[in-house]
Structure formats: C-alpha cells, structure tokens
Image (cartoon, rainbow, N blue to C red):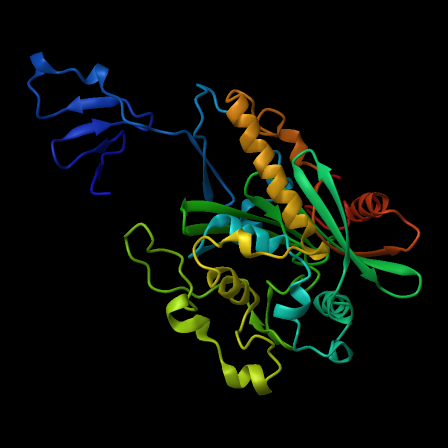
Length: 370
C-alpha cells in the first residue's frame, strides 16, 4: 500500500527493495553490492487481465494461464458494459443462493403489488405481471457444461408459458434473470473477501429497447421503490473492508420504513431490490446454520447447486490435479444467457430456450452470434 510506483517496479519504502510485476526483485537498495542476492528473492505475484472494468486474477500454478473464459460479453465494446461493485456483509454462498432462489421474488420484491395495477406495455412491467400473478412457480432444472440452469415456469395465458431462466456457473458466478432474455446480458460474481464478507461484481449490457430490467429503471416501481442500476455508496476508506458499501446496512436496519411497509405498498418496507436481498441474506448472520432449514420443492435449485459444489470439493480432495469445468475449454460459456421469455405450452423447455436465443441473436447491434 505504501510502495512507491517507479514505473518499472514497486519499491518498498521501508528498506528500498524493488519488485517488478512478475515478483522479481530488481534492487536491494540497503544491501552492499557484494552482498546482494536479489536473484534469490521473489515476491508472490499473479498474472492479471483487465476486462469489463475489473481485474481478473489467475491464481494457479501454470506458467502460462488458461485462456480467458469465452463469455458473450467479450464481443461487446467495453464502454457499453456497465460494471457495479457492492460489498456484502455475509458469506458468499448466501448471496449466491439468494440469486438462484426465484420464488422469493414474488414476495420480497413484489409482495405489495396488485397484478392488475401493473403496466404491461413495458418489458419490466410485463415481466413483473407474470411474477406477481403466480407466486408459486414450478421448476425445470438441468445440468450444463458450466454448472446448472433452471427455468421457473408459470402460465402466461391459456396457450403459452412464462419462463424465468438463470444460470449457475461454478463455483461463484451466476447469470441472473434480471430482464427479458433478448434485451439484457448480465453476469454476477460473488467473490469471497473472507468468511463473512463478499464483493459482488455485476456486469450488464442492455440493448436499446428502453429499461430492460428492474436494475436499470430509476423510476419508482409499485411495491418496490426506486431500483437504479447505479448504486449510492458510503464514503470509501482504505481498510480492507472499506469500499463499495451501500448506505443501507445492518447497523441501520437497512433503512427499513415500517410506515411504508404498512401503508405504502412496499411489502418489506425496504426500498430497492438489491437492498432487500442484502437485508434478507445479511440478517441470517455471516454464515447461516443450514441445519435449521426446511427445504421445499421451491428450493430445488439451491439443493442441486450445493450438491454440485460438494461434488467439486470431493473431486478436488480425491485428485487435486483435476480441473474445474471451463479451465481449458473456455468455449463452454458461449451460447448461454438468462432472462424472461414466453413460449407455447407444447414447446419443451430446452427447445423454447434455444429458439429464443436464435430468434434474437442478431436482433440488436452488437448482439453476439448464438
């Protein structure tokens, strides 16, 4: 932190030793030349790639890192990708499980909404209508090369089905269903800082069709309140946990408003979808005790994700050389998206999903090939 940036290396202000970006010691300034042993000194260093406004770090042992994952965002100009960081005060898995739990949306976020009051002329309104009209969806879940995928389904009308689809990318990435499938590309990562703090990173690309999701509309939404994509933050500090903290925090009860909960149509009394999620996951404690749970059919995706993670851990224990999916085959990430769409009742989930991607693959400038 106190190191001097001298362009070709970082020099320690204590003894003047200098290191380059690979960790090689370039200079031992406080040691006489005949006693210099800098060729034996190496600081720990990791190769990085800067993508989408974030640094991606390779922490493995290979001299040459594996290829960068072939995300669809790679095809989008970086100045069109919005990146948002939010620090969360709980274990990373609690946040991830919240994002693959879809049935809570109809209660925590939309519980105060009368479906008849929703304006269905907008993508967001149409999405909200389906989630509010039937708050107990059924599920189709299947494995993918990169992890798991669920499709939560409910009747859209007499002849069609509304699907809400999300992807779990092992070990801590998701593609959340934050808008219509054809209007938004999104990825969210839960990066562990320690056992009880997590840095979330959310990358989004919205195509020019008006607000594509609750995360991109700054206007107040019935039963939810304002849901802007750009979060407000507390003032940054330089300590390890001092950045990207939103004002709504455990110490102020996430700014819950009981009057709003009672009279204002906001089911939880907490404004903003991200804050609502933080409040629920955070008040479970830094690491919740899963032995108190009563899992139901609506928790199937969470149960499947836990089993998938446990299998990966067991595989690594049995053979530490066995790699995670996608380490060498970076193309497994291509052709997968998330979001909401409507399909005919008789069309199986996988066929409906594939058709939706193909139909909209080139509908917008910059949209990647399917």
